[in-house]
Image 1 (cartoon, rainbow, N blue to C red):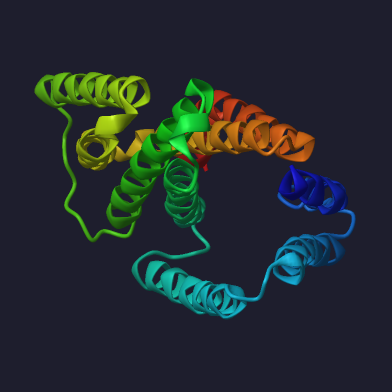
Image 2: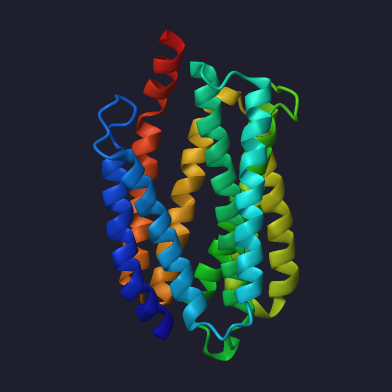
Length: 280
């Protein structure tokens, strides 16, 4: 509860800054963005505000690790952009489209890992004698969503940056995806019902989730990458909303709902996204 109240207290200010920044950037594509530099500054401020609040209230044991992760992410991001710019012209419509998709793939990779770790931590750091079925369900669901999203984002990023060859989906691949998804969901349900066998069941579920993510990303034509990425961004939002339920955080519930709504809006516009680039 204390964590939820802390997140709510700081999070609402960060959310207001983020929404204001998005409004400031909304007209950038048409050249009518009111204050793009100030909007980017607001996004950076919101990120620093959230990170500082978490580090300030922690016991200090994870401060060094958090700083290392921030520096690592900041240093890796430019290298991914440079690799993309070497292979495709960044000024072309196709290059801009792939840059957006590559960035979304990186977001799903990081978001998937975070959600999976939160689910795993929630499972093993709680006394199962007082662990109700809804919390077990949220922990298992978060782990499944996180691993699936991580694997799908990684495979799509490799395909978009031409590390993997092009592939043509077949009906057999689609049937395998459905079979793997059904089996993984079944194992997750058994984990919730029989927590005494959680180690074996969750281990098998994680392996199937990794395979499911790879199959769902490799067994499609690359033009459907927007659908896969939008779907997984929505699942990350759902996982954040579930975390808000566990922590009694209205802010996380609102933030997760906004991400889900944004993913739905993004999926509805994917056809226009490709048609606009193909007609340029």
